[in-house]
Amino acid sequence: MANIIAILNPKGGAGKTTIALHLSRALKGYGSILMVDTDPQGSARDWAEQGGGASFPIVGVDRAGALKGTIQQLTRGYDWIVIDGAAKLEEMAAHAISIAELVIIPVQPSPLDLWACEALVSQIKQRQVITDGVPTAAFQISRAKKGTKLAGEIRKVVADYELPLLNGNIHDRTIFANSLSSGSTAIDEEPEGQAAFEIRYLVKQIVKGFE
Image 1: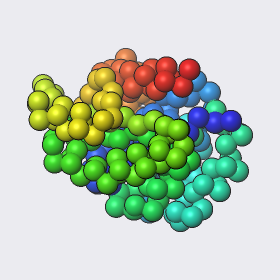
Image 2: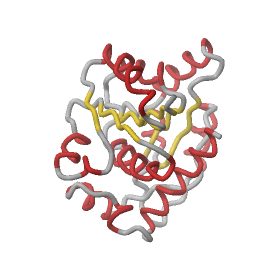
Image 3: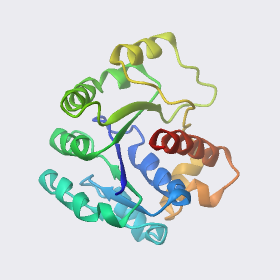
Image 4: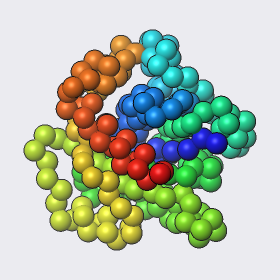
């Protein structure tokens, strides 16, 4: 059975697809990968058409009601399934939460971005009540600027949500956008670079959580 991870945030611009694609690429070192693109814009599918499809398969699911059935059909064929969530689609997010074992919430280092996640956190907690704590969930700081330090207000908002904050920030690096535009990833373009290091550090935390 596959380990299922959903990358969710109701706000656009949080870096969901960038993280989902890079996470999927890095997880190749831990087994077979399937990525599920639920964003109607199909950015991950566009990336695959640029050549990224050679890295791992990506399937598109544009109807919320089809998400769970599609993943259930495919789960035995892969070790990991990564769901790239869509912004502003609460029903799709609810279905992703219902099938995921882990939800990662990427947020920019701003209280405003964290406050925008209130409804999503509520959905997750409601699901946890009826499923004995599944899925687990955590925030991941994304698109951080170089030299950014997390202010006390940000840590307070995270603490109020009663969800953990993963260690290590993922910074807003040019290599992320440049590599994706050519159907590649920062891990392939600069395997020893800081962007690749940040993604691998995230993956280590995820894999440890599934052990």
